[in-house]
Image (cartoon, rainbow, N blue to C red; front, side):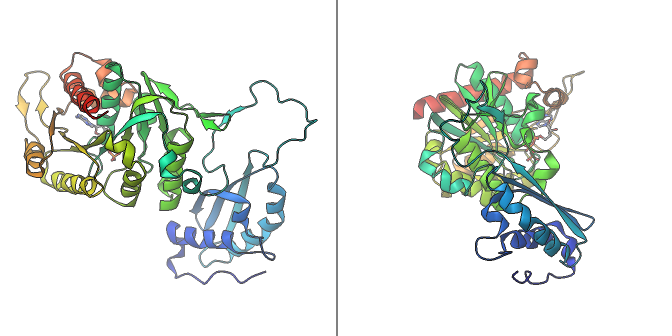
Length: 391
Ligand SMILES: Nc1ncnc2c1ncn2[C@@H]1O[C@H](COP(=O)(O)OP(=O)(O)OP(=O)(O)O)[C@@H](O)[C@H]1O
């Protein structure tokens, strides 16, 4: 056996510190060369609760027996980490890595169908899917982004995508907001995607094909994922989902302007060049400042900016029609002008927009004659025109 990894400081029960050390142990050779757990399995999840680590590994049926003898050593090594009391490793075995013998009985009809699990293939998702092979049937990508969370990016992405589909464009919607997946709720779907012949089948909803991490893991699980796991999941969504032929894939980007956003923009460079970025902001100064960062990031990546949308722009009282500008008004338009990018319009703050999202039907469909639906329809029309001009 090799030595345990170096001790960690007393703040060991912090999930990310402990998780890092646990991952190091999984990578450590246990019984001679080639005996580290992660050479036989991919890591699906690590969580630490009250000092006990729960580790989920995904492996093949062939490799599972190789992990079994290593499991007690690894669990014991993890339990020795300061602040830890024990560890449980659960293994999920999915598919044989070797082809069945020629005389093996035929698989029953439908055996190619099975539920999808993240990280089930060997090797990193990025190495399996170089950027130029991603989204082969997709003509253009529209990234809906915001400098900060909570400004209504997902609501805008869902209604924009539905609006584009209503206009007759074959449209997909990808929820890349790994830490806060809201698509299943907003589309009213919770089905687990299936894999058919190695391709992940997206979930149909409201005339769209859609994919979200929320269809696969519960929200709290994704919250503790580290950067590489997030990028691995996103790359699987771009490289292994059977999006088919799409005029446009709308991507609900993670909020902010960090590594995940940059990497996505890099990977999707060519498809984004035929679409572009829509930046969502509220009229508040702080949101506008972040929106400016968003514009700057996409400009650095040479992604075309389709424009800026002002969400929660004004509140229109449903009883007396009085218009109140709760967060100020017009800031996003000024910001767009200052940055030299188009202003795409204002979406009012309306309780019905939230209620519709919570009910799982985009308001553009549930109340097509509402002020909100008109605003989203106008937005979809502007984007459809921009896409037509680009392709
Ligand atoms: N124009 C609007 N009027 C009323 N409620 C809205 C409006 N836009 C969004 N909301 C509500 O605000 C909340 C946040 O919206 P949403 O999830 O779309 O934001 P987000 O920017 O994607 O957030 P996050 O980055 O945290 O995922 C939701 O409850 C949504 O229903």
